[in-house]
Image (cartoon, rainbow, N blue to C red):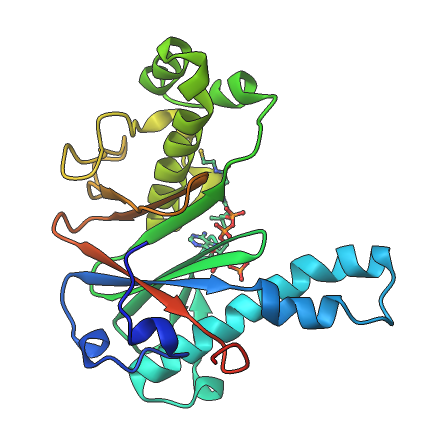
Length: 242
Ligand SMILES: CC(C)(COP(=O)(O)OP(=O)(O)OC[C@H]1O[C@@H](n2cnc3c(N)ncnc32)[C@H](O)[C@@H]1OP(=O)(O)O)[C@@H](O)C(=O)NCCC(=O)NCCS
């Protein structure tokens, strides 16, 4: 993962470049393990408490990281930021043209922040998907065809590529699953190529950027802006910074 050495050591991104408006989308990689691990390893918790708490702790820690980042960028106290939600739950910062998208899997979160056109980010960690073809029945015919024809050894990776691309688009629009998954095709919409066209003619086209992460991790960023450049940073909670 490309990292800016200054930002990779800061909790809130002290780099002046971060404040620049434009087509750069800053994406923070947030390691939730050490921050949540402190709570989860507490001897008072038994195993079922631990499991029940893990998801909530990761979610809460991600929201804290989001507030810290947005507070830094807007020069407002993080606690004073006010959020609102679209009709399908897409969160937004009130009275601001900053846009963001959050995705969390296991103990890692990615947070994308930009200005202007909406963005959608999805992140997944590769795990076996026994129902792969069953799930793919909901996909666009060209996506199903690709999954049927790729070598078996590459099928799971392609499934995750398609999945993260589709979900990034749905998160950019903010509709979730109210848009049918077979109503748009993400095959052939690789970085720098064709846009994704939605069935709804009033919807914008979306351009995709696949992010380069560790092996087995997949992430995609979607935006109606064809010229966005993702820039990766590492986020540290103050407790984690050495
Ligand atoms: C939220 C949603 C958009 C994605 O959920 P998810 O993949 O389980 O979770 P992620 O970690 O990637 O994203 C969660 C974050 O997205 C944001 N979010 C919530 N609703 C959203 C919406 N309608 N649009 C965009 N972002 C949304 C929130 O920041 C949320 O964080 P929170 O849990 O702290 O509130 C989900 O409601 C959804 O509809 N997903 C589509 C599921 C699907 O079947 N996809 C198939 C793709 S092939």
